[in-house]
Image (cartoon, rainbow, N blue to C red; front, side):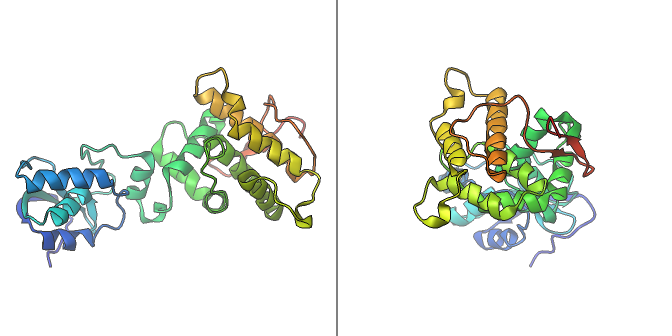
Length: 288
């Protein structure tokens, strides 16, 4: 077993066998999600003898965990052939590894700390949308501050991700999730919020338990989103994401207040309070 822990930055040329690759992969505790197509391509190049030695190889953090190279290691196992690579030890967690693959913002957050392993690109998109529309949140374009925001409201981010799993085009947009997130952060009745999610995700379900009068509000929102009415005649972009958030927020708030609506329109203001990095309200709905 090779000791990969090191507080000294150093590199050495090593022959990575499939067995050693497997050993190194066991130290992959906080790397990005595997891109299967990349592994397949790398493995084919290795089998055909087209893999050339370069400055890019395998990297380990100071604590011995894998920092970079999981796709190469998995390709070595799949190709079942030893490959010479440069192996670097003693990397700091803040190092941005340029591996030839684009890391998502969520990848970087997961790499930055073990407590961020739950973050997905989808959740990060909610933060970016809110921060764009409400700059007083205080994240700017700083990925570290996005991480702070996700940590502060982790319970709400996880709750929405676990309970709202719609995948159909329109229903899964960041604006819908951002509205649900703000509703949860602001203390909405979770039981009723779950029912709103039920109607939005699945539509009307028969039975007396689904007889509340405001169900039409969520069904109207569902129909609007599925049919893409907010995007008709316009290019997709930030304004559409904003309008989806405003429309979703208005419908969700109306449902929570037991108000029946049969048509969804984009309001001028957002229906829920928005909280900032410091835990304080940075936006209050008009009239409150």
